[in-house]
Length: 421
Image (cartoon, rainbow, N blue to C red; front, side):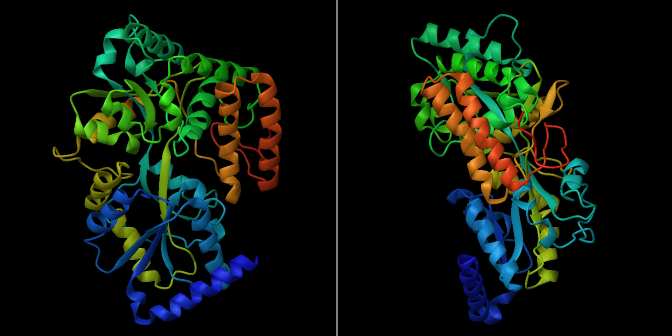
């Protein structure tokens, strides 16, 4: 509480010090954090806005702390918020209704727009951009595909067999996985592996189906490049040839396709017994009730949803539009490769979307750590799967109970805290 008061005071002092500079809109975001993306947001995406914008990024924790400090103070400098769906789920009561924002003729994705209501019937945020994770492969790997395997309908068993074929024929494991300290490995387990085998992210965390999932991943790990524990962005080992097949966020695969467009193919994530689990990454834009200039803030929200801004955002971040837009022929090679793969994955008959965790507040990092710890103990440490899941399920349940977070897809809705069976 003292930290919040201190930060609140600092925010107010900054507001006073800025004086006449209030015309500048502070866009406080958890997205486009890599330095290159942040710079492109400032120099390319926001340059045509009628007014000055200060685009600043922060990790989830500091982002929320500053926002809460300003809300507690009843005044602040943050004009517009950018974040993922889960970022907004704990502050919905303090967000302005955006139902009346004029977005021109833009046709927003209806499902994402409904998510932006946060279950209230009021437009707490508007969808801003979307992304997901995909598989990528060097075309050299295609000769080792098992017979009759279609990349568009690949399963985890087929991926394991393919990776085994590559390792045995080339003399080294060439499947790549972002298991480094900055890699998004937790998203794979939460949104892809678990849903594909259990149809769940939370409730069936320690189920027999979950044990099967971990044992399958252990099989795949046999054919995974051991340097994967250092990888953060899979585009780099793909470009060097250390890795021939990889999983990652589209923004972390893009450079490989843009630099060597003729060498790689993109395809959907694999399917398991429960379906083709995948995680749509939905970013939204909102306005806190303490925004110092509501008119300017709403103008910036409308600007971010203009077709030309959406396309500029795609070029800058590799996050795709949330409105219907016609993509020009000069789009980056990564966009051309990813678009059909994403459409195939999300439109597959066995598609099983798994939303990013929500309702956890500042416990989100600890939630992710449960999956990371499970991976490190089971896959890297070789510990007993059943025993690890029993212990980790206890930690997971404690986090869910503390936050009182109800279930989110693919788990069935719950009246209270999401159960961990």
